[in-house]
Amino acid sequence: MSIAEVEHVAWLARLALTEEEKRVMAEQLGRILDYMEKLRELDTEEVPPTFHTLEGMRVPLRGDDPRPGLEREEALAAAPDRADDLFRVPRTGEAEGEGA
Amino acid sequence: MSEVQTGRPVRAGGPASAPGGVAAGVPAGWEAVIGLEVHVELSTASKMFCNCPTRFGAPPNSQVCPVCLGLPGVLPVPNRQAVELAVRAALALNCKVATYSKFDRKNYFYPDMPKNYQISQYDLPLATDGYLEVPEGEGSRRIRIRRLHLEEDTGKSMHAADDIVTARYSLLDFNRAGIPLVEIVSEPDIATPEQARLYLEKLKAIMQYCGVSDCRMEEGSLRCDINVSVRRPGGRAGTRTEVKNVNSFRAVERALTYEIARQVEVLEAGGEVEQETRHWDEGAGCTRTLRTKEYAHDYRYFPDPDLPPLVLDPAWIEEIRRSLPELPDARRERYVREMGLPPYDAGVITASRALAEFFEETVRAYPQPKTVSNWVMGEVRRYLNEHGLEPEQIPVRPADLADLLAMVERGTVNMRAARQVFTEMCESGRPPAEIVRERGLEQVSDESLIERAVDEAIAGNPAVVADYRKGKEKALGFLVGQVMKATRGRANPQVVNRLLRERLGPPGTG
Image (cartoon, rainbow over all chains, first blue to last red; front, top):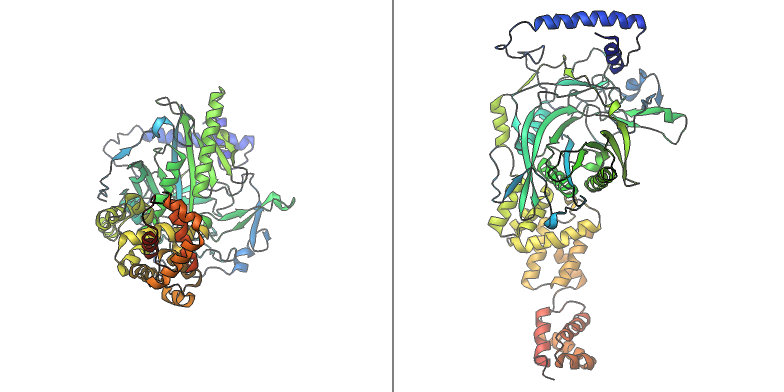
């Protein structure tokens, strides 16, 4: 894996890596990808794809019963910063109302 | 689900054009290609993956728990009701429902999800390949739906932009984080801003009919993102832009009209449309660049290891299918076929479940659908429009409207008085008989009383009478008005007309 690819992946995860870390990551991630290449040598034509590591399980569903969660003070207690009853965090530079 | 037979011509895909080849909102010589992504909040009592309540308008951060705050060591458990409502929505939109789908993590760095990811469905969505139909000319146009998937809503971020210090921060309320949503993605089958609005209106009606969501745009329970590009007829598809922050049906139409004109202008000036996300500015009435392609998101989706696959029993899906109520298209056809309503009126009334229910309940008490339809299309909608009310807020009981219509039929009140009574019913909520009695609005059909007023009108307006006799038929209307005025609007207009004609003789005889 190239240093440029490591830098891109690190940026996606918002990780700041030193030059040394980038070199180590390129080597380690490269080895993982090489292993995937090796797996690719197998003929998987007849093998159904695995979509999920928990294939074969099914997610349990729960009833639609509303219950109180945390008291507000309790919820905000772990916040590094707050403004009245709102969590306060550094802005990420995107426009308001963003989000998925 | 089995296709709803509408008995009308259906056309899929391709651009629509008005007579003359020009569609409103699309400049001549161009075509628009529009797709919509709609988020609909599901009407559950608790959140998607935890038991927190979903009540709208609660104080900030009062409906949160370790799961929706993303605290360590918690596990999400999906809400069965949310899954059921999503399946209902999918079936009502003619989608294929997958018996095997899965939840994925959509990773990003906005602070509106405390986990730094949103649980969504990526490559195996709950449902695919649906459609809905919107009116087009005399027929309808099919807009295909690519997919429908389940996800959790994000929290709400606010910025105190007026404060130079706090503007560097986002303020967060996580009450909304984790509320169940379905995202419904259309194919780019929409060709005009108007069609986009019609699509949304239909989608909203269907969601309301099957009890999936209340679809209150003002509360954000229905939200819409737009994808749009333009091209020359028959030409290659242009570069598309995404428009966000479109918060009303009217805004969708305006934002699209603006964005289409902007793209055409860029292209006609020899420029190129940039692939980017733009923000609709409602106040300024324009779209602005939000982020360009170089910042395009790589959400690094992967299957959520906390959530095994969502496996649905086909028998359960069938049970949900059987429980679907009559949907807007079927109801419209029934109104036309069985009640003899004009297709347009039937379409307007069935576009809202509340309006249709009101109509049907009134018809049950006063079984003359056409008369009831005229009132619903006229007076009821007029009152709602004038007061900015939704059909859910009709202030009159169907039984009371039925009573009023029966009074008109019996001749107890004339139409003019009936309209006045209706307005009063809306304002006071009182039954019509009471208002008629109290205001003395009973129609006067007693000929001797009316005769006197007729004679006075003739005696008092010799010039008008002369005009009438010279053949000015219109002059009669003035005299009718005078009689109605003298009887405070209570005279039976038919009797007034007859008596006036008897007294004056046929027009043009003077």
